Length: 62
Image (cartoon, rainbow, N blue to C red; front, top):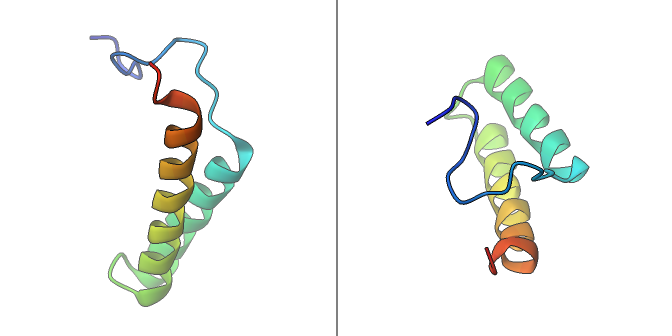
């Protein structure tokens, strides 16, 4: 499998900006406070919610 390619996901798959921004925020929080910090965990949970909502609304038919 090619690096960066997810099986079953179209090659023109676009990740919404709000998910990209939340992921960057989570990474920065993790670097600054650690992965077990409450702020990092909360941000990770918010990212999970965004991704789940996006998947349910847009990718469930793939």
